[in-house]
Image (tube, rainbow, N blue to C red; front, top):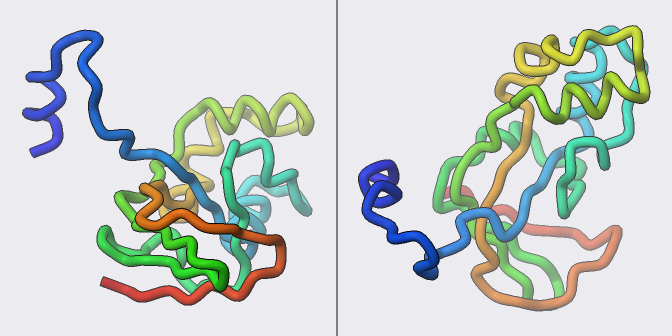
Length: 134
């Protein structure tokens, strides 16, 4: 149980970084934009490290799934990235007609994933990644 583990961590003690990468998927962000009544918004407003496209139900990939890149990099999925008000506030700064609090509901199940780098390597724009679902 991760909560139990967190409660035992001593301040200043080194612990595993569960969020070495965060990723979102383009078609899911298009759905979030439609849910907000927007044509689109800049994916960078959500703060991902990687923008994927063409991966169906990306945000629903289970923990333990892996994403393999052509030049050796492998990402391990740790968990879904739950929507929160922060990205909604970023979107609202560029789209003042949007109430930031609407983002949470609009992005539910579409907010992307976070994980750890299982194997380092090079990742380039346009790389064809292979997903192995756990």
